[in-house]
Image (tube, rainbow, N blue to C red; front, side, top):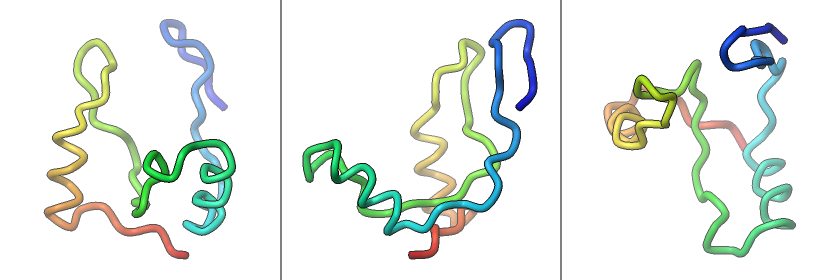
Length: 73
C-alpha cells in the first residue's frame, strides 16, 4: 500500500485477481440477485473526473471497445 497526502492510504497491488466465481459468490451472499454483476472486467485504473468521481460512461466505452479483458471464471 502506498500513502497519498490528499487521499490517505492507496492500494497499489492486490496480487492475483480473484476468479469471477469467487467474486460472484462473495457478493451474492451480501446483495440481492439484481445487484450482483453478471460480468467482471480487469482494469489497471478507473477513469475519474477532477473530483475523483468514477466516470461510468468511460468504463462502458472501454468495455465496448474491448480495452478491458474479462475476468476468468
